[in-house]
Amino acid sequence: MAIRSLESELPAASLLSFDEMSAHLRAVGEERYHHKHPFHLLMHEGTLSRGQLQAWALNRYYYQSIIPIKDSIILSRGPDPAFRRAWRKRVVDHDGDATSEGGIKRWLKLAEAAGLNADDVSAGKGILPATRFAVNEYLNIVRNRSLLEAVASSLTELFSRDLISLRMEKLRQHYPWLSGGLDYFEARLTQAPEDAQFAINYVYENAQTRAQQELAIQALRDKCDILWAQLDALYFAYVQPGWPPPGAFRLQDAES
Image 1 (cartoon, one colour):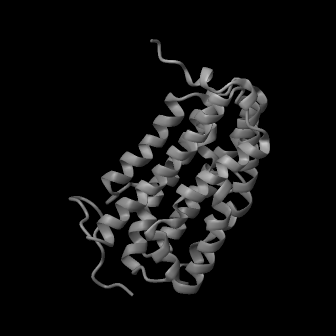
Image 2 (image 1 turned 120 degrees about the vertical axis):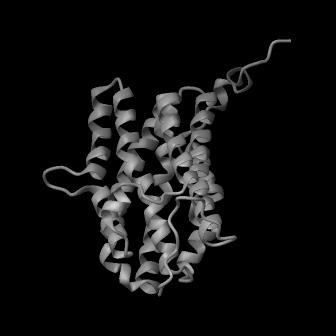
């Protein structure tokens, strides 16, 4: 017997409304977004050492550095000029232009505030192999899946504003020496909600069947897994059991 497609299993009548689709996407965030990861919980409790925060800033930089590459891939796949004009903003937000330094440069300021050398960070010295694998998989998603799924994978921005607000509060409270490097998060407080609104509207308007809606929801799950995997790598290497692989960043002896 032929295997029936998901399309035939989910008739047109079961198409989710905008509110239902939004609820499904937000449920993914509640279950899988990395705000619940033990590494972030330690950060917010103020129990990470300076070296552990340096490892986080270094490895997270690799993710930040591929965001405009990811967005450029999505931009190149967009057949509609209006879509490309809207999505182009994301590249500028991270790469900067004549009037703005961009998110990548702002993250390097955070790394410097943590005590790292910006040139070493931008060169990727000491980044965990697992970080590279996880982040590169994000590029694979936006290259190889449908444009709908590529856009849907960005919808972690639906949840990021709350985490960013909490993170800024806790970093200022527990790690005041980082306060001068928080410009990246300040900018994302307005950028992320704007980007999320455009993306969720696009996903809803372009998912024409329930099967396509489910593919979009799954793409968001996969993106959450990628973010979680990055923190898993940090936790394993620098918290418990504390086994960084050869060539990776090592915690400094003098930490405060």
